[in-house]
Amino acid sequence: MSTHGKPKSGAAIDALELLKADHEKVKSLFLEFESLRDNDDDDERKFELVDEICYELTLHSMIEEEIFYPMLRSVIDDDDLMDEADVEHAGMRDLISQLEVMYPSDDHFDATVTVLGEEMAHHIDKEERDMFDVALDSGLDLDELGERLAARKEELDEDLTAPPTPIDAMEPHNNARRTPRPPD
Ligand SMILES: [Fe+2]
Image 1 (cartoon, rainbow, N blue to C red):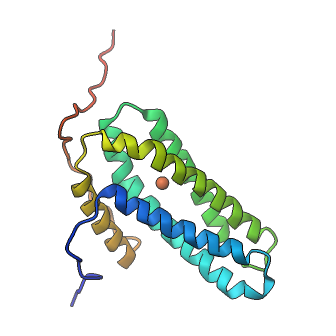
Image 2 (image 1 turned 30 degrees about the horizontal axis):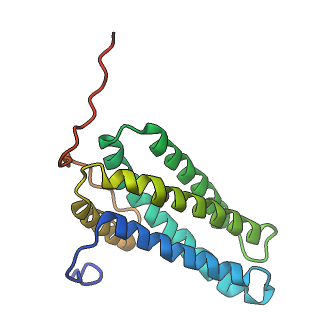
């Protein structure tokens, strides 16, 4: 028997709305952590919060890296923008892997969470200010992309090791796919 997660709720969410909702969720978790930062009595809640932050960021970055980033990269001419996002995700993964073996009582636990929160705030800001504008003009079907992101997120939420479906061609509406420059 497979009920496959939560029931679908009618209106589909577009890709940028979905990613923004993820950003808001993670930002509010970091805010709650900061409100407890210097409170050593609340280690249990801190542990839960960091567990949730790491999980949410992992799911979010997986759907971006598997689907959103490669689709966008294939239709825009801005490798720097996409490369920087990749590097920021790598930095995030490094901090998450440190936190996964730490406890709130450990040295540098609070500092590691705070640095992760600061780096994510910068990353989220850049995505929403620069990358999302580019995505809006890219010709990608953001509704269809949103459905794909939501479906993959649901799949990963059930099984984080579920293999990704290869990205098939999803042609942009009005933007020519970049063609490689022939050698001189
Ligand atoms: Fe991201």
